[in-house]
Length: 426
Image (cartoon, rainbow, N blue to C red; front, side, top):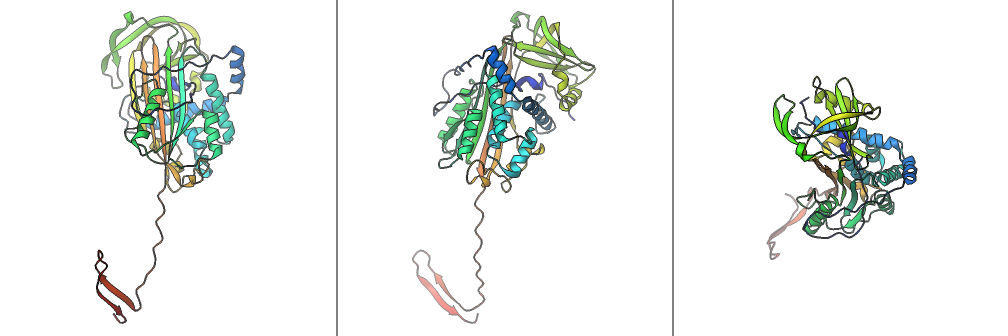
């Protein structure tokens, strides 16, 4: 496997979420500065305990495991040649959940297997996602926003059960619009711009078309609990996977951090806000490599969950800004979600009456992470397009000219028959 260099742990965005906002959508291009994201209502300690008791930890573990399987699939794909590989498993899972609620039969079974939801009732999955969002979107001393939306073509009658599920479980806005139009393109991109605090200005370059588009957007703005002093940031050598070096701005700070190390790695948790959220950074030791760390990550993440000690750490952390885009269908197929992408096999009959002819024709994922002395800003968008199969070709009319017939040589424009006759014996 070719070597990859990952500057931050995969767990960076595994749990980032925020409040959803309903309201009207504006047409037109983004203008002015990035919109201010609304602050979520703080939960009391008792309220947090009550919600925490309702959160299904199995679903959280399944999401993290899915994220790492997807990370491995993308890492193994030679199409993505960048040294960095960042994704938002939460964003991707939420977009897939919007689609999952519309599936039935084998299509639903494949998706539930891939997402780790096998054997769970859809209602329990939706409630689990709702409770998790309720817990994560409140407090923490950080600014968070998560939003979901369903855009569909005019005249498409979405089933009431589907509408209730995506609205109640995921706070999704449902918008009817001509997905082939420029106005829809502007409105969707404006929605993405607004919901990501302006970090991701657009998800589509052309109108998406199809029958529906399902979108999740995440915005995160977290200040470090203890900021790095910009005066201590200096350009230093960073060793790349191939052994060469390049200069990067290195932030420096000494302080108390949750720390853990193994035979081949070190791990530190750098807290944001009031300490409820943090950046987990896992660093291979000099005797190891990112390839070895990847194998450990993909095998078992529980190693990095518990048993941290509070240590004085002299921390050097690169200041960086990363941005990536992915088309996910091939990777999702490789993880077992096959039928949803097959025009002849997909079953979205729980979305609409004609949904057994719907299928997913694209899944786009964009992500940006900006780490500085003050903290981290990050945003991700996952957009999934659902289209419909073409009408099956009409059965041909059988006409065997094997008996006497009449013919005419006709001028099509005037209807004049220039020649005509009956053929009894050709």
